[in-house]
Length: 310
Image 1 (cartoon, rainbow, N blue to C red):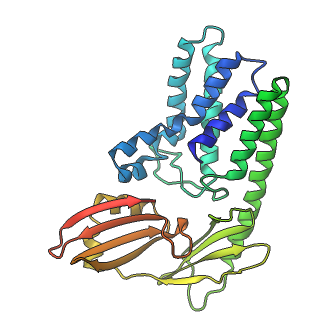
Image 2 (cartoon, one colour):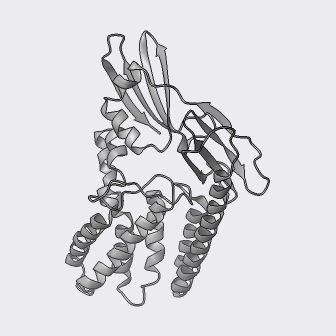
Image 3 (tube, one colour):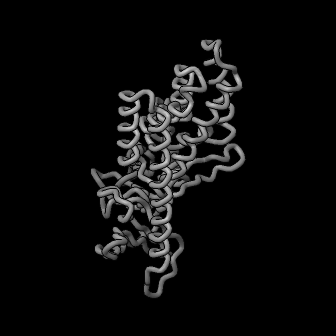
């Protein structure tokens, strides 16, 4: 989930506590704790590869948010004499753990068990930026600002609607994944498969699907209301060659291949050099590349450049 939506979630949560906690303390605490796991955005100053490696890492782990909450509560307490440290800490826990929950709902992957496990957990229910949730939160906050005496009721209503919406998408995603599981393939066994929110249009009934076999990937758009309107496109896996093996030694390739669920390889020549690319089909749109790692290798087998973009 994007950082703006996380902030709006925190502001909405504060409406539940305005009559029980100092309103300013509740608002500042819940907004700041709802966005503080994304403090790892600072690693972007050290390059996109480092960002890919560390984003949703330790600051998004259970241990990480506990430590961040303890620190944040102490900082807020310095400026608040009317509210106890323990009350502030509980609000920090609420905001930061809600952040983890919403990040788990999309396909990016969150390392919630660091430093004990590097596995990226993901539920694949929502887009990274979910517009229905964003606008519902925004409208709710506007109404709460106009009708301040009803802030609690508005917050409860908005959060209940969001909860029902997420629950509905979870059920529909399970149906989409079951459809992919049963998708017939001739003489091939599925190694891995998944159903992910379609990029556009993003509705609960349209899903981006990926199937991996030993020799191929199959990608396509699934419309649960109208069936498989776009038949799956078969993408043959590119056999790894010496140029790919050299490129895999780069930091960008190591980080990307550790991150990607369906890394599709392409190797081609340009301006006398060899271009080695991997794109993660999880975030693709038919043949439009989403998350892409590129390594340029010279004819004398030296890595000239490496980059990651999305």
